Amino acid sequence: MTWRCRLVSRSGLRRRSKMAKLLKTISRVGPACVMLFLVACRTGDSQTTRTREAMAQPATTQTEKTGELPAWIVNPPTLPPGRVGKNNCKFEFGVDTPKWDFHPDAGCWEHAGPDGWTRQQFQKLHVPKFHECNGGPGDATAIRVCRAGGAGQDSPCGEKTGPKGCARCVVNPTCH
Image 1 (cartoon, rainbow, N blue to C red):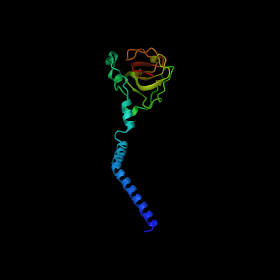
Image 2: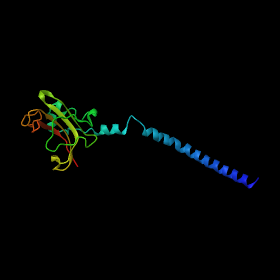
Image 3: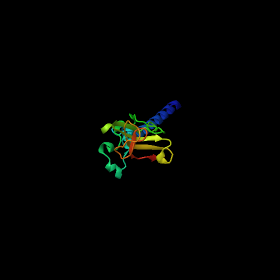
Image 4: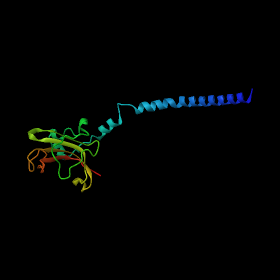
């Protein structure tokens, strides 16, 4: 056998030995990679679904006043899933208009109530200078009732309406 034949046969053996090691490693690691891929691609519990559900924040912290309010005001206590990330509110806020789209799980939902009142429920509306946070930044989560006619109306929440025609019923602020 010439030196060329020996060299070719040795390099062929080396290649076969490397290939055997690679196949052996793949057979060990392959199933774990497939399982990891399948778990990551599950659609039933996607990260966005879990985030949306977890982020629905109750506007009602159970208080003495909450128990006295009519059901049409306190229910539902959280924004319905289809309302998170949306805003259909028409009644204006005070001087510092909150940013409803600052947080992805914020939202404001308004719908008609009895006697001309409108129920307005919102969560995580960002207010840069929030009164409830001593003028610091915070997020407003609350339920209020509003009616055309401006300030001084007696509301079903027991408060008089403010200049925009709204009275706070339930407030759950978060300060930053």
